[in-house]
Length: 342
Image (cartoon, rainbow, N blue to C red; front, side, top):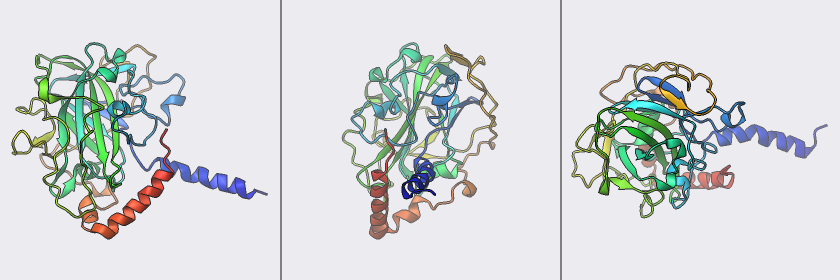
């Protein structure tokens, strides 16, 4: 006979994975046509040997909520270097494959870079100066996170063609605004070696510090039913904004406005890749081969993928105004009580 406690424990064990998987993280990077598995916090720590990844470690799929914490840079555990680095040409593309994302976790999407001033494996994020290469907030009646969902949970950014060769951190992030007054940050950082003849490095107003970037940000109430077209993505102006520095199409507003519109079509077909090939440099044991992934041909406009997103877009949710918002806040307050955050 099972005791009541045993049955309750079994029920919690079955429910817990669903609760943990309610958030998300980047599962794979597609860089210049090559596929690199990201750090999987639910698998990689238990592998023998632990695989060498280009992405710095993250503890789970939950958010960072303290903007004053060093974790805001590359997530908890991301202060120290990873064992591998991917090679990408200046002007090349990086696709971040999240594979899933909750449809109500709406907000902006950004991509930053920071020079490692040498070897990324030995570089601490406490010394990083970040410059923005890609951003999208609210446009065409949708938050950027909705566009990411509709695009098969993928987002593509472009390495600035002018960027000086060297090793860099690439920081990709979704900010989820579903819990009013409690923004959730989902950053992750990959290590890349930029090649090419570029000679420029961002400076001055193009640089930002993390923590520090979000200290004075007033995030909007996305359930208020307002038009958020005037929302400015926090942070500095896009680095090399006179060129195609990111995959977003720059808004024709003045430089002081950091809002952009994104098309983000899927990248070209990516080949299977391992950490032992000539594109990855590693000081650890070789990792297992990354699984191959196939993608559609890039398009000039946003690609909708209804099959991969079962929930409604943020536009419908915003129009429900106060009643809907109160329900969402109540639900997420309950969720935070069960938060698995370490």
